[in-house]
Image (tube, rainbow, N blue to C red):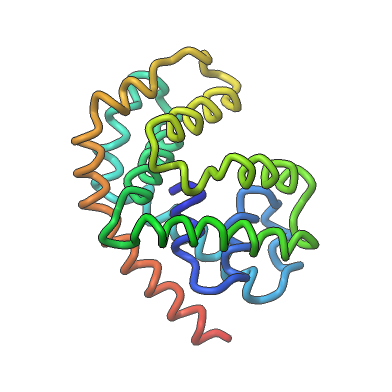
Length: 197
C-alpha cells in the first residue's frame, strides 16, 4: 500500500510517523525511536507482508506486470490508494480532507525524527496535498509518474496510467476484495502491539 493507506491504517499519531519512516530508514535504526513510532514501523511491515500475499493483489499485479514486470507491486500500491481515497463508505470527502491535514500536521510536529530526504518530500507532499488528491485521475497519474521517474530500469514513458484507466473496474474489484481483509488484519496486529506495551 502507499502513503494514504499507511497513514489511514495507523491508530496513533506516533504510529503515523513510524509508518512513514519505514521506507526511509535502515532496519537497524528502527530501535532508536520511541516505542509508539516503532509500532508504526511494525505496522507498516505487517501491512506490506499481508498485501504482498493477498490473492486480490496478485490479480491486480497482472495488469501492470506486462509493462513493468517486477515493479508491478509499486503501481498496484498507488492504485489502491486511489480507490481508498474514493471510498466514501470508509470516510467522507470531508473526512479524507481532514485526515490529510492531520497527517501533514503530525509529520511536521515530529520533524526531529524525520531524515532530511523525507523532510524535503514532505514539503512537496503537503503543498500539492498528495494524500487528498490521490482520489483524482491526475493525482494518481502524478504518483505513477513519480514511480517511473525513480525506477532505475524503467522507461519513463511506459503507459502505466493508461493501463490503470483501462482496467479501473478490475482494479476496483481487487480493492473491494482486499481492503476489508487488510483492515481486519491491521487491527489485529495493533491489538498485539498494545499487549506488548
